[in-house]
Length: 167
Image (tube, rainbow, N blue to C red; front, side):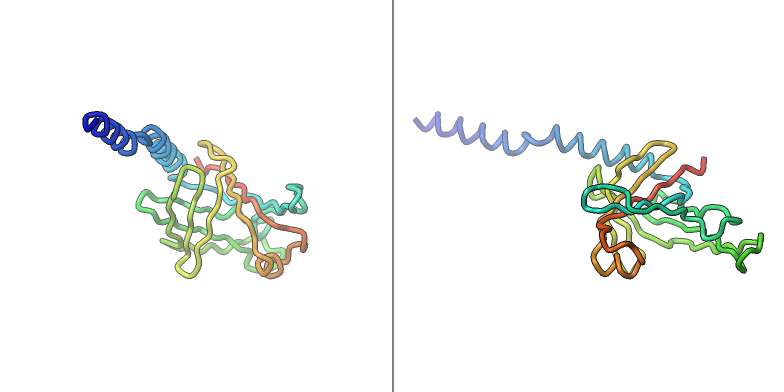
């Protein structure tokens, strides 16, 4: 009887110790794959605002001026991101002013689906809806106060930001 209890206990211990390793490996592989795809420069192209029925309510170009290039976000392997922002000097002028912000953000991948980004004051968590070598889309829900502050239609519940690879 003691041999049976010992065998069951040993089997249970082995199952609990090693039973999840395959899914853990799969998750770790997904994180490594997404990190490799994420590293580098991305143009911040477009924002889509969605309602609770998952319909696009509005979309807007992320260019601050039609005469300026898209802003650029560069993810670095050390978990920081640099931001290059363009803005028109005056309305209607062709000339653009650029501002480079080194280490503008800290980022991490808590799992294979999510990107966590901090600017030092707040933390936002995004879900990858698309991530390839050329395209990325990040989605996150909005609070009622973010909807109001952002000037969105009151039916908006989430945004999705589209990025294109610089390369």
